[in-house]
Amino acid sequence: MSTFPTSSVQEARGALAARLRELRLDAGITGKQLAQLAGWSVAKSSRIENAVTAPSDADIRTWCTACGAEDQADDLIAANRQADSMYLQWKRLQRTGMKQLAETSAKLYESTRLFRVYASHVVPGYLQTPGYATALMRTIAGFRGTPDDVADAVEVRMRRGRVIYEGDHRFATLIEENVLNHRIGDQDVMAGQLGSLIAAMNLPSMSLGVIPAAAARDGVMWPLEQFTVFDDSRIHVELLAAKVTVTAPGELDIYLRAFARLTELAVYGAEARALILKAIDALG
Image (cartoon, rainbow, N blue to C red):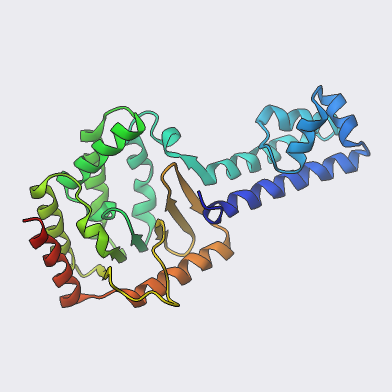
């Protein structure tokens, strides 16, 4: 996995480690003395202080007790959990199935006014047809070994996808042409999905661009991991093993600039429709 999408996590881990080090220094004890007071090896305390190992809640309480700073423990534990929430493995997110994960994001979708979505692998969730979503989720559930609640999860996704028709929401969507040719489900499923994309282009809330596979990318932008920008405050990056949440202003800016450059590569209107029709014709 690239370190770029997780640098916010590393930054948060580093900040927590720095606060723990300050507590030790304020207490006037060495790393060796802290390890003795905590009943740990010196190596463990060093790994925590240098952000090599993420501490558990119990580790933080023990550290604070050793430093005579028990009153700091709750705040530090909260900071530790926040860092942990930035990088969440799909296995952990989907341990009870996919329905709950879809439901937890519903409020975020309802509250977001501007969605900017770059799709490099699959059609974005809010544009998926029931058949496409079902085929995709069955593949994911089988690969990750998660509980099979696909039918319920698809129902939630379809309900969540109503945001493209309701309320004051706008969608700037960029889809790599390759996505149109990635076969998810059978021929009928793909034909229905591609036809639905053409229909979505007419929605007043939707700006849908397709980035041609043959687009010259020199000096512009190469294909990236799939990501969604929620207004200007939060980005979800989809990796194979995990979902990364980006909120650091510097990284938000990087993704927004990347999106702007990818927008320059996309075609819209009749040209985009022609690429989708070409993919439909290729189904045979």
